[in-house]
Length: 169
Image (cartoon, rainbow, N blue to C red; front, side, top):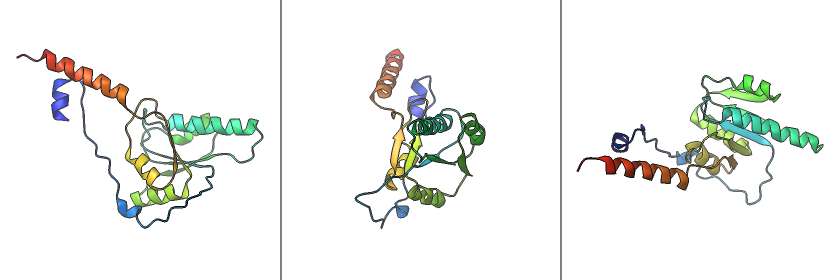
Protein backbone atom coordinates (compact mmCIF):
# COMPACT_ATOMS: atom_id res chain seq x y z
CA UNK A 1 0.00 0.00 0.00
CA UNK A 2 2.89 2.39 0.73
CA UNK A 3 4.43 1.71 -2.68
CA UNK A 4 1.30 2.45 -4.67
CA UNK A 5 0.44 5.42 -2.44
CA UNK A 6 3.93 6.78 -3.09
CA UNK A 7 3.52 6.90 -6.86
CA UNK A 8 -0.08 8.10 -7.04
CA UNK A 9 -1.92 11.02 -5.56
CA UNK A 10 -4.23 8.59 -3.71
CA UNK A 11 -3.75 7.03 -0.29
CA UNK A 12 -4.10 3.24 -0.24
CA UNK A 13 -4.49 0.90 2.70
CA UNK A 14 -4.78 -2.86 2.73
CA UNK A 15 -7.64 -4.40 4.64
CA UNK A 16 -7.56 -8.20 4.68
CA UNK A 17 -10.88 -9.94 4.18
CA UNK A 18 -10.95 -13.20 6.10
CA UNK A 19 -13.48 -15.37 7.88
CA UNK A 20 -13.24 -17.20 11.14
CA UNK A 21 -14.28 -20.58 9.76
CA UNK A 22 -15.06 -21.99 13.20
CA UNK A 23 -18.39 -20.13 12.99
CA UNK A 24 -19.28 -21.82 9.71
CA UNK A 25 -18.02 -25.43 9.91
CA UNK A 26 -20.19 -28.39 10.81
CA UNK A 27 -23.19 -26.61 9.36
CA UNK A 28 -25.70 -28.73 7.51
CA UNK A 29 -26.73 -27.12 4.27
CA UNK A 30 -30.35 -27.29 3.25
CA UNK A 31 -30.65 -28.11 -0.43
CA UNK A 32 -34.00 -26.37 -0.66
CA UNK A 33 -34.49 -23.36 1.56
CA UNK A 34 -37.65 -21.35 1.68
CA UNK A 35 -36.38 -17.80 1.85
CA UNK A 36 -38.39 -15.25 3.73
CA UNK A 37 -38.46 -11.52 4.06
CA UNK A 38 -35.95 -10.87 6.82
CA UNK A 39 -33.40 -8.35 5.49
CA UNK A 40 -30.15 -7.55 7.29
CA UNK A 41 -27.76 -4.61 6.95
CA UNK A 42 -24.36 -4.87 8.68
CA UNK A 43 -21.89 -2.02 8.43
CA UNK A 44 -20.57 1.29 9.57
CA UNK A 45 -23.06 4.14 9.68
CA UNK A 46 -21.06 6.57 7.55
CA UNK A 47 -21.71 8.11 4.14
CA UNK A 48 -20.71 5.79 1.32
CA UNK A 49 -21.38 2.52 3.15
CA UNK A 50 -24.95 2.18 1.92
CA UNK A 51 -27.03 2.51 5.09
CA UNK A 52 -29.26 5.25 3.66
CA UNK A 53 -29.55 3.50 0.29
CA UNK A 54 -30.35 0.12 1.87
CA UNK A 55 -33.11 1.57 4.05
CA UNK A 56 -34.60 3.36 1.03
CA UNK A 57 -34.56 0.18 -1.08
CA UNK A 58 -36.34 -1.89 1.57
CA UNK A 59 -38.94 0.88 1.98
CA UNK A 60 -39.42 1.04 -1.81
CA UNK A 61 -39.78 -2.75 -2.03
CA UNK A 62 -42.45 -2.66 0.68
CA UNK A 63 -44.33 0.07 -1.19
CA UNK A 64 -44.31 -2.11 -4.32
CA UNK A 65 -45.56 -5.08 -2.32
CA UNK A 66 -48.34 -2.88 -0.91
CA UNK A 67 -49.39 -1.82 -4.41
CA UNK A 68 -49.58 -5.48 -5.42
CA UNK A 69 -51.71 -6.19 -2.33
CA UNK A 70 -49.06 -8.53 -0.87
CA UNK A 71 -49.51 -8.78 2.88
CA UNK A 72 -46.00 -9.94 3.78
CA UNK A 73 -43.56 -7.02 3.90
CA UNK A 74 -39.79 -7.02 4.24
CA UNK A 75 -38.38 -6.40 7.70
CA UNK A 76 -35.01 -4.70 8.12
CA UNK A 77 -32.57 -5.35 10.94
CA UNK A 78 -29.60 -3.00 11.16
CA UNK A 79 -26.33 -3.85 12.93
CA UNK A 80 -23.51 -1.36 13.34
CA UNK A 81 -22.64 2.07 14.63
CA UNK A 82 -21.46 5.46 13.45
CA UNK A 83 -22.44 9.10 13.22
CA UNK A 84 -25.50 8.54 11.01
CA UNK A 85 -28.72 7.70 12.87
CA UNK A 86 -30.51 4.79 11.14
CA UNK A 87 -33.77 5.53 12.97
CA UNK A 88 -33.89 9.05 11.52
CA UNK A 89 -33.30 7.72 8.02
CA UNK A 90 -35.96 5.03 8.47
CA UNK A 91 -38.42 7.66 9.67
CA UNK A 92 -37.85 9.64 6.44
CA UNK A 93 -38.95 6.58 4.46
CA UNK A 94 -41.74 5.57 6.85
CA UNK A 95 -40.02 2.25 7.60
CA UNK A 96 -39.78 0.59 10.98
CA UNK A 97 -36.39 -1.02 11.54
CA UNK A 98 -34.84 -3.13 14.25
CA UNK A 99 -31.58 -1.41 15.21
CA UNK A 100 -29.38 -3.74 17.24
CA UNK A 101 -26.37 -1.42 17.51
CA UNK A 102 -22.85 -2.78 17.65
CA UNK A 103 -22.61 -6.49 18.40
CA UNK A 104 -19.96 -9.08 19.12
CA UNK A 105 -18.74 -11.01 16.07
CA UNK A 106 -20.37 -14.29 17.14
CA UNK A 107 -23.71 -12.51 17.64
CA UNK A 108 -23.54 -10.93 14.17
CA UNK A 109 -22.91 -14.33 12.59
CA UNK A 110 -25.74 -15.83 14.62
CA UNK A 111 -28.06 -13.09 13.34
CA UNK A 112 -26.97 -13.88 9.77
CA UNK A 113 -28.09 -17.49 10.19
CA UNK A 114 -31.50 -16.19 11.32
CA UNK A 115 -31.87 -13.74 8.41
CA UNK A 116 -32.76 -14.37 4.79
CA UNK A 117 -31.23 -11.51 2.81
CA UNK A 118 -28.17 -9.31 3.25
CA UNK A 119 -28.47 -5.91 1.61
CA UNK A 120 -25.45 -3.83 0.58
CA UNK A 121 -26.55 -0.92 -1.58
CA UNK A 122 -23.38 1.13 -1.87
CA UNK A 123 -23.51 4.52 -3.63
CA UNK A 124 -20.06 3.81 -5.12
CA UNK A 125 -18.23 0.60 -6.03
CA UNK A 126 -16.90 -1.36 -3.09
CA UNK A 127 -14.89 -4.55 -2.76
CA UNK A 128 -15.98 -8.04 -1.84
CA UNK A 129 -16.41 -7.25 1.83
CA UNK A 130 -15.94 -9.56 4.78
CA UNK A 131 -19.63 -9.10 5.55
CA UNK A 132 -20.47 -10.39 2.05
CA UNK A 133 -18.29 -13.46 2.54
CA UNK A 134 -19.84 -14.12 5.95
CA UNK A 135 -23.36 -13.79 4.56
CA UNK A 136 -22.58 -16.22 1.76
CA UNK A 137 -21.09 -18.58 4.33
CA UNK A 138 -24.32 -18.34 6.32
CA UNK A 139 -26.35 -19.23 3.22
CA UNK A 140 -27.98 -15.83 2.81
CA UNK A 141 -29.12 -14.22 -0.41
CA UNK A 142 -26.89 -11.19 -1.01
CA UNK A 143 -28.36 -8.14 -2.73
CA UNK A 144 -25.60 -5.73 -3.63
CA UNK A 145 -24.71 -2.96 -5.97
CA UNK A 146 -21.86 -3.90 -8.35
CA UNK A 147 -18.59 -4.75 -6.69
CA UNK A 148 -15.45 -2.96 -7.74
CA UNK A 149 -14.08 -4.67 -10.80
CA UNK A 150 -12.48 -4.31 -14.21
CA UNK A 151 -13.53 -0.69 -14.70
CA UNK A 152 -11.90 0.36 -11.42
CA UNK A 153 -8.82 -1.77 -12.03
CA UNK A 154 -8.42 -0.18 -15.45
CA UNK A 155 -8.53 3.32 -13.93
CA UNK A 156 -6.00 2.30 -11.29
CA UNK A 157 -3.71 0.74 -13.90
CA UNK A 158 -3.81 3.90 -16.02
CA UNK A 159 -3.08 6.05 -12.98
CA UNK A 160 -0.09 3.90 -12.00
CA UNK A 161 1.25 3.83 -15.57
CA UNK A 162 0.95 7.62 -15.84
CA UNK A 163 2.85 8.03 -12.58
CA UNK A 164 5.56 5.57 -13.63
CA UNK A 165 6.07 7.37 -16.94
CA UNK A 166 6.43 10.65 -15.08
CA UNK A 167 9.28 9.30 -12.90
CA UNK A 168 12.77 10.51 -13.83
CA UNK A 169 14.99 7.91 -15.51
